[in-house]
Amino acid sequence: MRLTPFYAFILALSTTNLNAQSTEKHTLFFETASYELSYKNQQVLEAVARRALEMQDYNLEIQAHTDARGTDAYNQGLARQRAESAQAFLSLQGVAVTRLSVESYGESRPAYSNDTEEGMQGNRRVDVLLTAAGPDDLDELFGRWQDESIQAYAINGAQDTKLIGADGTCLYISAGSFAGPDGQPVNGSIELRLREAYAMGDMLMAGLTTTAGQELLISGGMIYVEAAANGQPLQLRSGAGITLAMPAGELEAGMQLFRGQQDGQGSVTDWQAAGQPYKSLDEILDMPIPPPAPTFQFVLPEFSIDRSGQPARPAAPEKPRPPRQPKREYYRYNPPLATRLLMGKERVEAKEEEMYQEAFVEYERRMTEYRVDSLGYLSVRAGFEERLAAYEKAHQAWKKNVYAQIEAFESGAYAEEVYERQRSVFEEKLPAWRKKMDAWRTLRQQKLAVFENNYAAQGNLSARAANQYFYEINQLGWINCDRFWEVAADKKMQLAIQDEDDAEERIFVVFENLNSILRTTRKGTQYMTQAVPKGEPVKIIGLKAVDGRSQLAVEETVVGSKTTYELAYEPVSLKELRQALGGLN
Image (cartoon, rainbow, N blue to C red; front, side, top):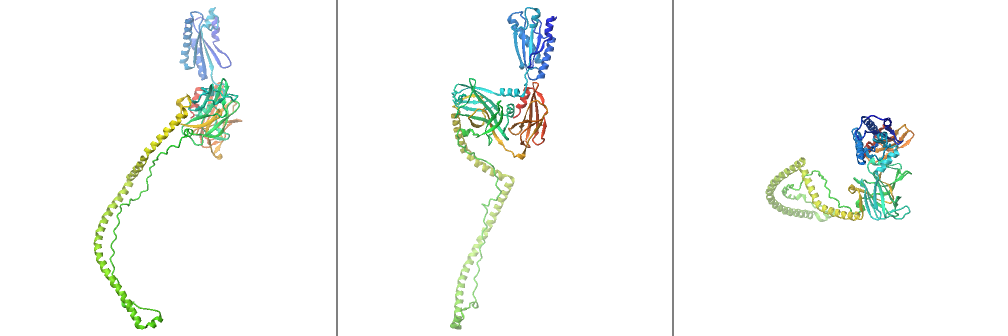
């Protein structure tokens, strides 16, 4: 195509900076009735693609035009074909089609007069508008994230409403809970706006921190709630409240409600404990304690021999002993001397004879008993030999049983027997417990139905969590479910991040093993943390916005391994930045 001087002038100006907001206009020109890209047009589009890929974050709009020749329908179709030619070429250069906005203006918006050939040449064109979409500063970056995270719901102020957020936050709002700036109740249409921050990445992108003064906190999640009607902000009516349920994997002891302390720009600067520990769903429903489940924990008792069948050795019969025959000379009468002198010798000897005769009679009696016992002994002795033989046999059998017990214990058979016995006792208790538990669950479902059926449900109904922290809130704004992280002062230290340039930065410390995040404070050429626990693995994350480009730095470390850090920043697209921060859980 031969260019007229006017057309050549237009082509020379086909790449233009439109304004100070980094919007670049690149123009493609076409022959009459053609939508094919010339070599020059391809060069322009290649330059656009290179520039867009350098930007990473951009908006790209294609505006297609024709001259006045042809019908409106023909020109509209031709303009779309020209736009689609440019779109297809850019797609081949790696510019995502999802970032293109195609509009066909036909002859409706001519740049030049269609009364001359030169003017019509100028109107046969496609304008490619490339605008950098990166943030100018960190306030803009965080503002974008915060705007993107807002969930808006329209509720009826005169109706009980259960609102479930995208991440599982539940708000139970009773009718008539809101009031206007004048304190009067608002019962019409209300716009409720909710933000949720449960993952570390969400907290970071919201610019939040888990501290209360100089105390560290471990978070179960943070939310922001505001309400408006007819453009006017609302508040909770005096005496009214919202039941808040925040999702949890496992309920942690010590979690309580905190309220956000905000600066003039609405940013949370600190958290203040509200003195309200969480309640579980069962506490909200006033449920009785569930029946304790029977437990089974195998306990192997110490080994002891079972002696219940041990035979008793028969006692040997005692052989009777014959009585000793008395002797006359052993019997002497020795009264006091005066008595002896008065009695005389004969009477003393008579007394001694009397004593001997009494002893001899006793001897004769015992001798008779001895003869009888001796005959019985011989009979009993014969039976004892038989009982002893039977005992020896039974004792051998018992010892064999003892050896079997020892062998069973050492081989594990005894343990299996004890296990089965204990298991049997446990299983006998299960049916009764299951019956009680079924009754408890039925009661719980009934109470839950009564509790929830009073509310009209809205939001992400599938996001409800298995466990929830329940609170009663009486004011809107930022709300936090946290517990204090108590660490001795000598077990903590400050971290310092060295930074010499003047570019604005926001630097966070994210703990790997706990849901806790800190912001740093600039002091001279350093960004300082408050005292943090030694030995904890952390990620130091820095963010910058330089020349419309986001920059990210990540340093993984363990508190105490160093005292000062220098971060290495790299340019990233907003998509890459979201992906990196979204991986913080």
